[in-house]
Amino acid sequence: MKRIQVQGVHHITLVGSTRQSAIDFWQGVLGMPFVLEQPNLGNPDENHLYFDPGDGRLITVFTNESRVDAGRNAPREIGCVEHIAFNVSRATFLQAPARLTAHGIAFIQRDRGFMDSIYLHDANGLKVELACYKFEVPEGFRAVDVLMRAQLLRMAAGDHHITDAHLADAIAELMATRERLMA
Image (cartoon, rainbow, N blue to C red; front, top):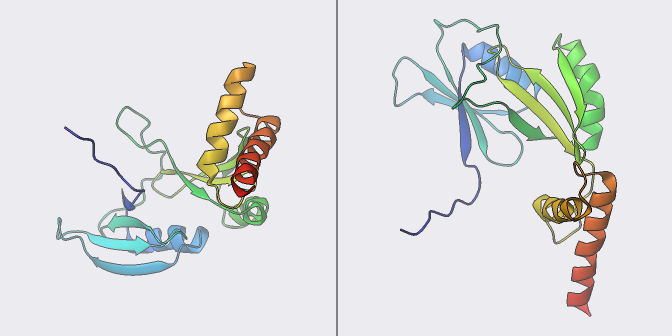
């Protein structure tokens, strides 16, 4: 059997509590425009809210007005989603701590070697990451091209994790391939 070739994430659907709770977090805190709402055609007791995370794809939330916010962290077990990460600009990343604090939302900030991360939870315990790469992607390439090359450099050097040096060298190598193609 030939494999099925996916072409990206179409959407992610979450189980939420109320309509207002979903709108308050996804639009109010994370700035995702509320696109549309319709009944959940698979479950008449739920509504289906659609939000735009900024790349033209969708985050959707099933809501039901009889539910209340979970108020606890989502389970972290086999088969569960650990977290969902969203790309943010460096400017947004730098402003996020103050804005989250203003909303009364606790968070943790981490350096991941090739990116910086801020982790927070929605009212139902879903862990959300705001991620910001430490590099600019050269024109004509994708972030994954830089990361794959940096990983090869890291492994060749026997280093523990990707560092700024791996990223800089990966970008230089990618740029050199483009320059050869243009010559």
